[in-house]
Structures are given as structure tokens and as C-alpha cells.
Image (cartoon, rainbow, N blue to C red; front, side, top):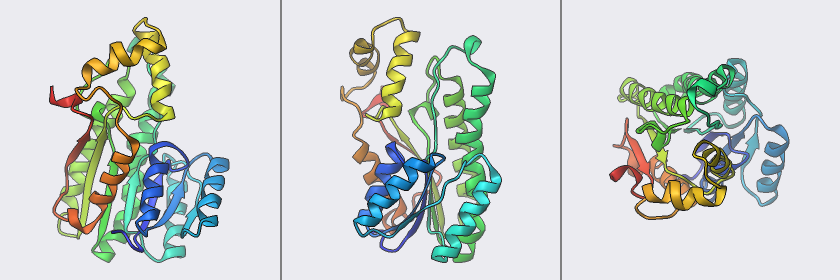
Length: 258
């Protein structure tokens, strides 16, 4: 479905980004792994290359414009084009606003929102020249609803949805689609880390977080399968979704349907 599509995926050395990258490779894409963690990045790329997949790794801090310019230039130099961009890099911190470190708030906005902007800004000229492109921005259910303790994360993910809509409008006649994927709670290390933070802010044990805090809000009473997000990402990046643009796609087990 994605044969030979050159795809950059940020934050792809672990978690959702890694799972998306794995599925894209299985679908025949050529994947550029990028992550701030060079050691993890090198290990992941080596593993996939050993299995015969066509991929490279380029370390980058997506909030650093020089890093992004180098990433885009090196990708174009190596593969000659960029077909798909998955803006996935992210981090989490949970704290009430009055206790939230300002430096941490700025860092999270820089990586998730400003980083998405910078990455998009520098791939668009290539995609417009090709008259083809797919941009997938990783938002969240916290991009459409509020959640106590997540002021920075909510702000960044809401902002990503706004940026997605503007980018979709500006590229609608250039063969480019731009969409935001909004997962609910997925069983990843990042979410598991949130469990401890949520336990602290809600005064319950970690074991109680799922049953007493999360599952009452999730009609399906389960965490989202990470494979569901990877599969939907493949669909949105494919020609089957060529008329889908500017959308925020919720994958949340019914969380936001209530």
C-alpha cells in the first residue's frame, strides 16, 4: 500500500513512532527514523536493516530548526524525495498549573507544537514540487478535550489540530493531505509513566488508576491497541484516503463519544 514511499517519522526510536515505522516498512515504505535519542535510534535502525528493510536513521531535535533542515536535506539527498511526514515526537509531564515548571511547559510546546510546525515548514517545498505529500500529525484525545494536570500537553495537542487545519487549507491544491491522529490511552511506556503521575494528582494508587480513573471514561474498558494507530496511519498515508484532509481522527475506544 505504501511501496517505495519515502517517510520521515519523528520520535520513532520507541513507542507509537516505532510501531508506525514498523508497519510502514512492512507495507513497503522507505523509512527515515529520527529521534533525539541517538543510541536507541542506531539500535532500532540496525535491527531493521539486518532484517532487509530499506531505512536510515538521522538524529534530530525537532524543536531545533538547524537539526530539521539537516534532516530534510539528508533525506532528500539519500532518497531524492519525501512522500510522507509523521510528526510524532512528544513527551509528557503531569502537574497542576501552579506547580507546573515554566521551563517544562515551554519545552513541551517547543517539541510537540513548534517542532511539528518546523518539520512541516521544511518538507512542504519538496512535497509541493512533487505535487504529492501526506502529513500525519500526532495529536491526542487531549487535543479535543481538557484533562486536569495536563496544561502543556493539552495546549500543544490542541495547537496541533489548529495547525493541521491551516496546513491542509494551504496545500489543498498541491496533492498534499494533512491530518491529525488523536489516539486515546495506548499501552505504551509514555502512558504507563502517566499512570504514576495521575495516581499522585488524584491521590490513588497506581493499580487504581486504570479501574477508577481511566476505564470509567472509556466505553470499551480497554487501552487502545498501538497496532490500531499504526494501521490507521497506513490508511491515511495511502491513496485510499486522498480525499481526507484537515481532519482530526479519533482512535479512543469511545472516550470522546460520551
